[in-house]
Length: 152
Image (cartoon, rainbow, N blue to C red; front, side, top):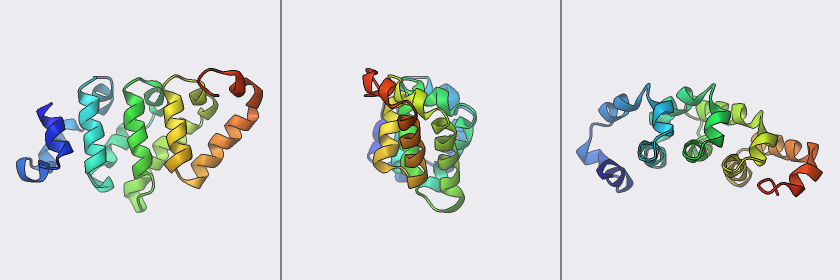
């Protein structure tokens, strides 16, 4: 909790060596995504830090983007990556890659209890190319989505 509050108040600039903090998380993103408290640390980092500092989060989620989007805690981290997907150059490339991978299963995410939040965030704040993927997935099975408790 102390770490979460420190990051939330952006006092991390004074109290922490940012590289040391990030170094402790590198290689442990998938593990942290599954933990109720550790995922909050990742979310605060993604909220507070510039994209170039948190690209490693996206890199470690590649290959697990659909799983993370459907996970009760992981979806929160993927939601934050939508905000970073608009960053220029390599800093946004990782976030866009995670979203592209996740949205390969956009229809499935629409019908998932937690995945639907990722799809909603993409429609509200994502790039046009990702929004078009969601629209196409919804159109492909519109009657089924309309009747589904999470997709409707």
